[in-house]
Image (cartoon, rainbow, N blue to C red; front, side, top):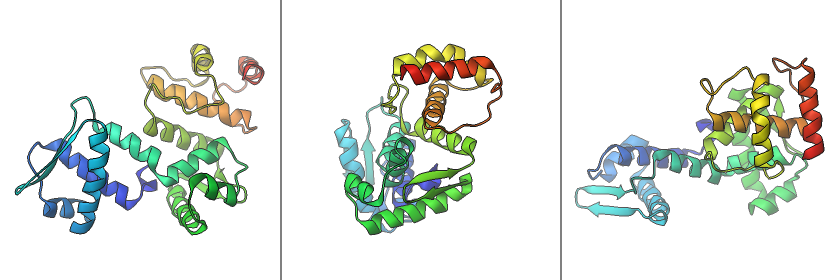
Length: 239
């Protein structure tokens, strides 16, 4: 997933990791070397991070010895990673496309408040990164293309990385209804909680439902089982 994050955001995450590793001040020079960024860029990143951290009750600390952040003890590094994913233009674009494959250039420009040139740059960057996943971003209309199982694996990883177990980005799927179905659905994945975490499994199941309801199909381990078609019929009726 990190291949789809901008160099700037990757540098900000590297800085945060350094701050989590020590309570001692860190010099601008060290931050610059560790992130391979210019001192000027580091100062700009610190300003952005300061705003984010102060919003959650943190504090920016600066002295002649360097800088650091006093971050609330209940906030882990994964919090910032999830925020980064959800705020990344590339991932915002991919998420919109996941739920709506009819979007045009004009619609995306208006919804994301960006220019055509910015959209073009984002698409080019995404295609370079998606290549390693065996996928490609098609335009007019926008959609991710490739082997269906690769698309599902990719989006499952994205939702797991971007959202907490308590968040539910699938507005077209009733969360309670999906959770009621999960015990029986587990038979189709040959996976248990000992192998895959429940949030991961739930996101995977939701991704599969969205793709199935859009008319896409993929061979599952037990795809010949009649109960799978029965479950799918139930879903298309209830949702």
